[in-house]
Amino acid sequence: MKRIKNLNGYAIYQAGARDVTKYGFEDGSFYVYFASDVKDFGLTNSTPEYEGCGSLEEAEANCAGNFARAKEIVEERTTAASMEEILEVEAQLDAGMDPDEIAELAEQETVADVIASKFPSVPQPDVLALAGKLEQIRPGLTPEQAAELIEAAERIFNTVRAAFDEVVAAVMRIGKALAEIAAPVMKQAAKGLDQFHDALLYATAEDPKHWHYYKHAKKARTRKKYRHRLEKSLAKALAAGSGGPS
Image 1: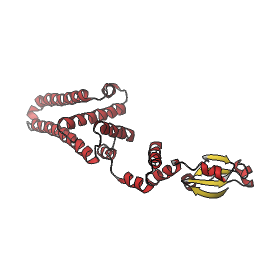
Image 2: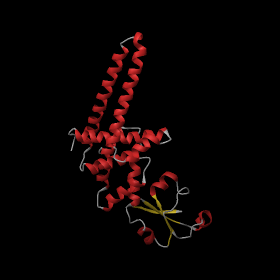
Image 3: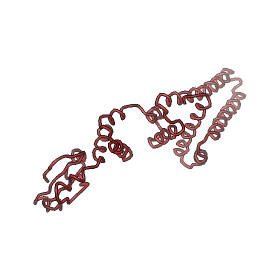
Image 4: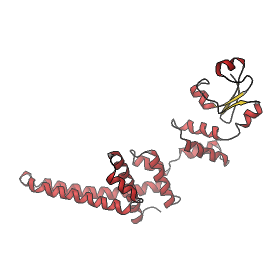
């Protein structure tokens, strides 16, 4: 295969006589590949996006779109390029944005970045979904405002937890002589806090199904995932009710 040219993120090759028996290609026809695929995997391990083009003009016409260029841009900044990211960049290119401008925007912190840094165990699709919901509820929400909102919710939770820890510490100071009396008190206090926490989660749930899965899903991993979703909904509600960022 002879490389003819690179164009808009594509690589155009022309098949020769030896490629007919080697690859099953048509002698003299043109084949269009993603340039990044050829670079990373080699020609033999790449699949042509357009094959059997009868002329160079036809092959070039297949390179006119921005999809390959978008794929190239996304792959330059991440090792796990998703189709959603590529299509987003393609739309930006179609709208006339400069590739350098797109790269600069990608380097800026987003609401999703803030959420991901605060909740590193939450899967990326859930992070993006939450960021989308926040932006729907509060259009124009900046990463800084998102951070303030999350931090406000964390302060409330930390205050509740700290108060509970103080109660436990005070009970423990009673001493071993009263351990049998202290134990049920501590158990009841913990149960009360859990019930209070669950009541808040139930009251602020954005989707009743999330509460159902949190309580009744068979897998602990699933219950944990929906508890995280409910806590995010609660954090949002608490921040909104306490005069958080708007």
